[in-house]
Length: 449
Image (cartoon, rainbow, N blue to C red; front, side, top):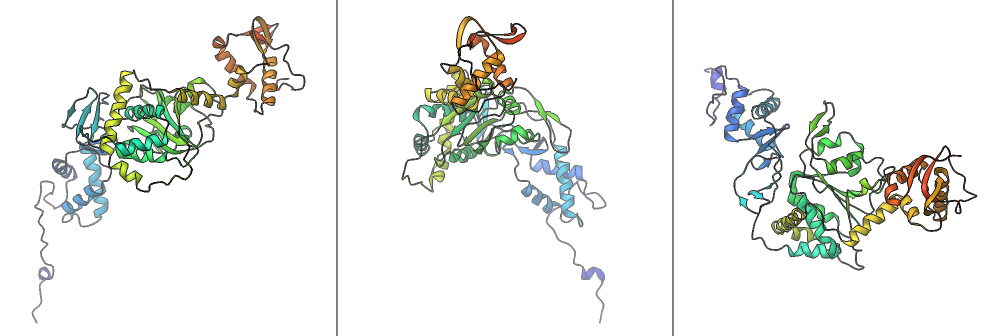
């Protein structure tokens, strides 16, 4: 029997992909040339280690890797998966560039660019935040969405929500507010977060406000994000508030740290929308600065016997182009008002109540029968604190630390009409224009004694 040759036993490999200039004479892939070739087919840029097209960030690189595999399968015979990863890195290096300049006069949408002066262009440019939703100037009004809001919120508070969602469309922090929406549970607050995902896509981050404050790596997750949504805000008091207060008002670069990497200066313009069953408080920060950064909306109570529509979110998603126009209307109103939100009397009262719940010193200062503001009077700091302790005892409140009490008085002495003095009475610290002599308790010892 005639022997078959070795070549006869191995049929010649057939493929439709012609040899490219990225294949060397030895049949090996020249990765830089392949990267240039691939980018000629798929124009992209790499910002901060992520690939972008003019349509936005490439959230899933798997289709690109699949195409690379099809291109190189006849030239890479071993360790193909590892080779594809190397080629992906080569592609990113080939198109790496500085992130585009942050533009605050336009909103990048799926079908072009909407400018805040009201005109629209179908042209696209590279950007960090292209929304997955199209601008449709004649989209019908989102009737189901508006009905949902009427059922969820008090009517006078809906403009503030409209303005806040519009505010988050632009990469700015000029309003210096975070949105908090609180209720007793079951009202449907979390559905707002689902609609926000339809509007913002990958430019929205779902996470925990507590983590932002306490985890030093959390800022890195928020770089170039328009919005963070916490749809289950914890009711535990924050141990500190420095990070949140900084991010709400940030208008410059800030230190960002990633695990195992040197910290860098990064760009953050993220806004916060948090939904929960209680107000946001801090363990130690009782300042007005913490609370004035909050836009606090309360929901209506869920009607007894209400039957929830399991298809409601699908109905509202079908109105997303109309919801975008609604949000843009809120943005335009906010800009006309110089980035001041429409605050109803209810919302203002919500914040005032939250401040008093978080800082019972405010309740004490509003009380009667414990001290008197009188021109020419004087009192020692220890005596003023004893009176405050008596008020706490009478009202079942836990007294704050003496240092917190004194610092609050010192920070607000002008509005209270009092004056702090290191030598108010002899060598004792105290306050002018405060009389507590008639109100000093005899059975509450001071912690300073």
